[in-house]
Image 1 (spheres, rainbow, N blue to C red):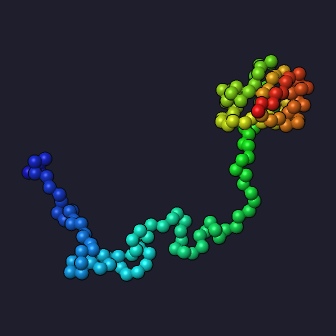
Image 2 (image 1 turned 90 degrees about the horizontal axis):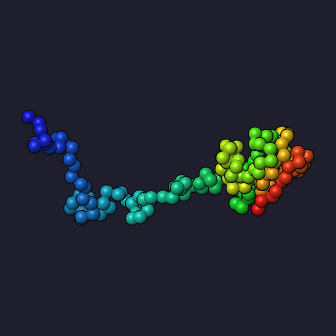
Image 3 (image 1 turned 135 degrees about the vertical axis):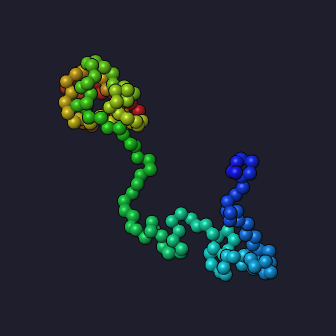
Length: 148
């Protein structure tokens, strides 16, 4: 009868750990089952860097690279002026207000572009404005404040 009191491993499921490097007489001596010569036979050389292709020129060095990637560029959250019509007149609009309204998802810098028309007088605080956006805000008797 099988129960918790007489459990044992299945037949042939337990294997003895291979003991290597204990002399020629053991059968696993001298090269210790690693074979002779080569990268995997040496100590500490079994693992390679990511992208290593066995000494062949790696793909990321073979493919041409073009252009310049500026690490210090400013990434602006862009909002078109037409989407500011949903706010009440004489409202002060900033990045935090736009985040609460769901117009902007994330980001630290805000730029207002002049796509669309604005019909209300608003005070808009942003890090940058396009020239057409400034003109449209001024023509609607609003204020545009540049925040640093």
